[in-house]
Length: 194
Image (cartoon, rainbow, N blue to C red; front, side, top):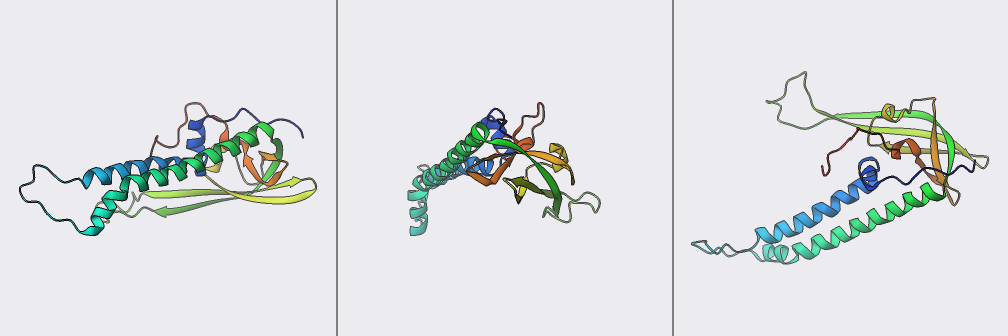
């Protein structure tokens, strides 16, 4: 199949749907906020009656908070840029092939919270979703396992059903699941930051 993929997803769609892109963007913002926040919190209080001497470790943390935050943020932004360029390249130059959903795994765990405030019937949980997809590329069977940000049923991926993959001929082992990156109007999984 030489059918071209689809338009490149928007940055917001990548933030919401691509785990690597979304996590790196969060780390970039958090590192800057933490660096500037630690620096601000470590400044001496001019209106203090008694000046307390800080331990040397605290001075080092305050001194390096902003450069450390900027450095971590820069690394995270490099990952964001690299991931965006990779996805853009796959969408612009990739080919669409069919894959078969072989397995769907859902891992659910309870969120730790104060046991006195939660009832036995209303326990908060977090679910993680994984799919295993088999596809054939140039006569070779290949299998990928991917973590999804939403339930596989949201992307219409069910065990035994076909789904479209987009892959580069130069990297056939790293396809993208097309349905994950397609825009779904009116549906937002995550809030802007957390």
